[in-house]
Image (cartoon, rainbow, N blue to C red):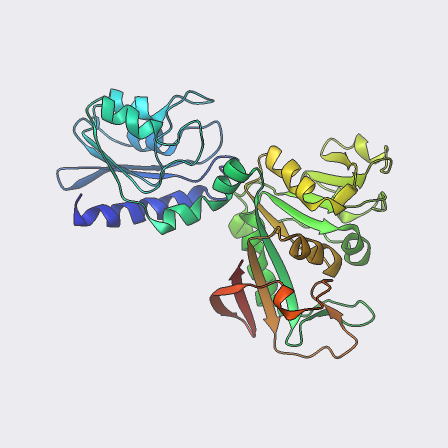
Length: 357
């Protein structure tokens, strides 16, 4: 391996990020082709069913890539799906070396792409980067654990409250923090809320920032045990897909007439948090954003089914009778849900904390 390998691979990760909001259920991948001290081509995976990063990079090369080195953020695939196998495409292109930043967690690949390349006489080096693994963490979790990466978003006061005692919550945080949320929505495959939030706030739960107009519309998910979602709710409007999750025996047959509306019935309804996440994984969701009230947020914390917490904290107090961020019953401190702080950032007048389990 060479000292420059890491630099090229980090550039591949940055390139892959351009497809982060459009390529689901596939993982984002970036590729750079280099030969004789010159970058010949670049490519990233833009959309499921379209060319993979390696194919797009090869298409950008003039004169072919024979004897070139290929840098790629994820192991080239080895099976034919909606597109040809990338490992075979690289072999046919006559490349001399492939450098990989992460082994594909998909059992259909899981090293077989690397093995196929080596059997064809191509030198393969694996230089695993944390940034590359981080980039595909949602895909990895869906493939290996059959549930998406769960990101909880909250907006609270300094005393940990999301609303006044009368339920009023608009707005706890400032406009800059609310604008910042658009990024997290845009990179999510689904946004989950509860029927209580739908009734109280009537949210659209869409991506409205023009900067993310290219992003796929996230699936809007309403946890609604007894079919209480109002027929005129904004979350049912527009063309963004919407999934209502009910307890068995409840729901509204009239709502099902909308082409973009699905209704799912679970035996225990949305209380079965793992069942909800399993369904979303089956629908191809790699990353899920929870934007909901204390009851729903508390259910994910209590079940231990969360991975990341984006906590916006405003420099204000809402008082003793205000509503807590999560309905979680803790009687012994050692049993309290625990998080580790991984990043802080000031967003306008507010603070954004990024926490992990």
